[in-house]
Image 1 (cartoon, rainbow, N blue to C red):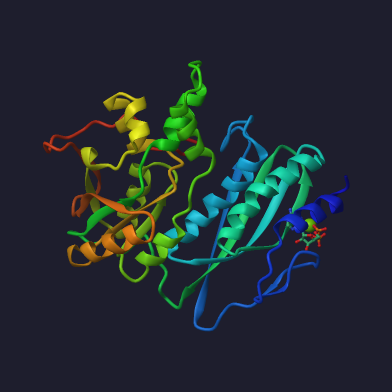
Image 2 (cartoon, rainbow, N blue to C red):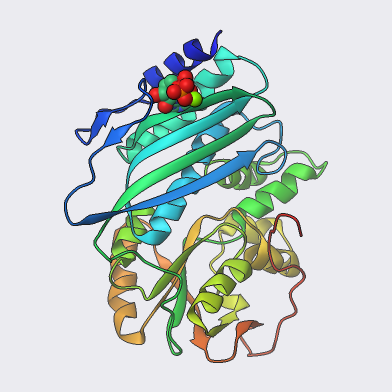
Length: 319
Ligand code: ADP
Ligand code: MG
């Protein structure tokens, strides 16, 4: 297949009709209409084979995940997804692989009525770069820098499942149903878009947890000029994770494991109760895990208030 045949396959699978796409795939650039009184939130994430996903990962899962990690960034900004571009670098012109990739990508895109409006197709080591565009009402984006001393810290969903799945994948033990469930969380993360919209205008700060809770909450603290204290025993955990790991392993996965794609946010005491109710009604509740303090850095304590040592703080390239 030629480059243009591949682009045609992608266009057929992934193009979704939207009135605001004046020109989509096929010209030199897409032409897009931003609604009045809104700003664009734009984010890019690259997935490299062997770095961001194991080489044996199914094409459909890679397609899903490459979009999901980007939608998670829009969710953290409180943005409504609209458009995406896709830069695909493939080792060879493999039609079946591209069709499966598009299957995963398009099933998530359809859920959010997100249109693929352009991209680039090149040959080289398998690498996927997606750029997403979403809308926020003027000056309403959720930022990292709004946390205030006294805020409570919350996180949506559960933590550590994806990192637990990755750990089990690397072990020689036979694959159980339990492992299967955790690996599914690794391969098919759910971007918390609806929850980001609930938080908009109500949370003081927000970030998506991609590199591990400690690392990402650390970014909120640095940007806001504050610190945080979190209770490791309050961290939300799936029954699957608790069944599969010892207490200390589980704690490390929850604190430092990456790939959760949950939202970590802070809110004032006053706003918290109503917010938690609205989040639960949106389909994914949140849990209070700590509070914002003056002293910089992220401190971890247990339910008894004792300091907890942390093995590894999170994922970083070039580290
Ligand atoms: P150009 O040479 O002008 O950069 P290309 O030949 O790279 O154009 O692409 C032709 C059209 O196909 C463009 O509209 C481009 O946005 C689109 N396209 C190319 N690759 C992809 C892809 N992987 N996903 C979606 N659209 C793509
Ligand atoms: Mg091009």
